[in-house]
Length: 490
Ligand code: ARG
Image (cartoon, rainbow, N blue to C red):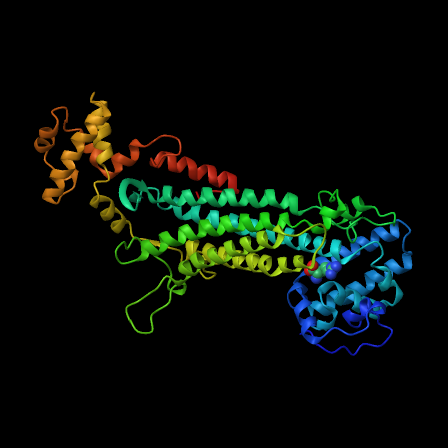
């Protein structure tokens, strides 16, 4: 916990923030202003990136002869101590020192003396913070990419078990045509695959080094920026110092990509909520993802999908916040930029938690005792089938059948509308009408019509690439297996 009062010895120039540049200042900062301007409460999560950036900078300063080898060694030693202290929860974060950067630098100087004071040569907090956020976000993007892959795998696995399960496909939430449940799930796999690719693309622009831009104009020291970039595994250096310190496009791009992930999660959530309502009854999710009602004893509410749907709004809100944060800023760094962190951090946290919970809710968890997966979604194929039978989902198939017998499509469409009307009047499916009745609508109808009126016939007929025919769906599952590096179970 940061403490408001510093009790550091006087030799520590950074004992408090107002002392960091104190010669010019005639009065101390008020407690309120300190709290208002400090970011250490939230930006301390950047500590690993901050230390990594500082070590790469110090290594380069030494290699360029800007600081001595002894200073470099002292900085490395001090930083190792600091990392241990932070990891052990023993680091004394001070509000007085405003942010993660000043806190770490002050502690370094306390530990190793003048070598610590030399670290900031040729650097500013402006290029330092931009570097830290990029390094941190790069790591998070990699974690998110892994989770997106896991979610795709979970969906592909459930799809593999449900190729022959048929549910009504909807347009306007009206029964349209029957589709394979696997096909439906694979639509989400496409979305999450695009999300994964998008994250990779964003990563390329995140992974560029601002350090060396200094405050805004570059620096007078002979820095080797490329060397620092290599040390940090970055793909290049920012080519304009003004842009380097002030660019937050990478954060906005990431938030946009994150918003799309959440939008896809939210659409899936909406389906899960519908599917598990009593009116549908298509699926069940494990009890641990639902909650009861304090008043209605029969209830099992889909809280997790509902919350995910809600959290999508929160992430999209952060995207709007970041865009609005940047739109009025003149070059170069402005303190406004400190406000980029909380939305970005919350976006990352929300995204990771949501993806983790969805992986488990969809695919289940491995039971260590049996080695089998348990607790994923349970499919009620019967209910799906009954729903598909209810809405004349094979009406288009009858029209296509008549077209193949030579009727123009518009005439076939009209003929089938009459047949559906008659079936509705009797309260039966088209396939339950006797052949003679069907032939009354058109003499070209033969006994083979019942093949196309069945749900299976309807599915099998849609064998276009990307269609719902089981053969197509299986081919897609195989493609996803290969793409995701999963070996299908023998
Ligand atoms: N905590 C600050 C931030 O997050 C670090 C940069 C401060 N630079 C400055 N010139 N005040 O943006």
